[in-house]
Image (tube, rainbow over all chains, first blue to last red; front, side, top):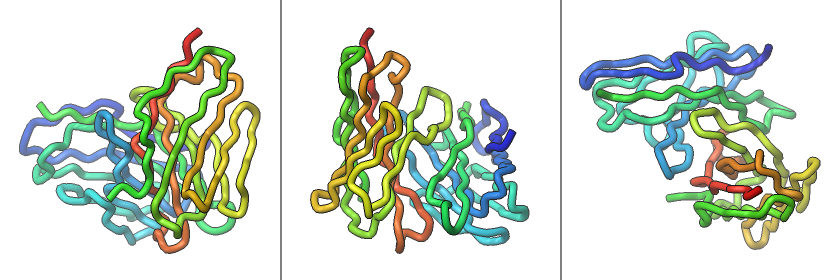
Length: 114
Length: 113
């Protein structure tokens, strides 16, 4: 089945620890995105990547890092510098070019800082 | 600054009636608009989209209307069903946004049986 797989679904982190959320897609999409959702708020863009080995900061990139070494993978690291990391994290991808106007999402990952 | 706004956090509708969800945007560079449906603890699923060259797009029970002069779009669901109860997000993108998508804050729809 083609799609976007995020793991883990639920993750607990102690304060001061880094944690990495995985995102893998087999849709052959060039662009990939990480969003964060907080209760009562919309989706806020953390980072996005339009092509392998390239990525750009979104609106709330502070305290996060990403890499894009492979087309199908776009992991997000939540560092200890992120002051309020407890949230629902969503990975998404999009084809480029003609017909590539729609963004598709994974199932999301819940991160809780304890 | 919120470029896409959904001013109604919630909406309740009787089963079988029409649900109308609204969305406003500020950036005139947006030329593609989308609606997503989201259940708690799940990723949003794509519902329907519209290009700025159109003012209406239909897909089954879902119709999206675009009023470019007012920078306003709406999603109509007819007839509404209990399974439609979810949070609905509108999103926008366009030339000059660098492949970014901007989302509203969502409207929680409850369809009452």
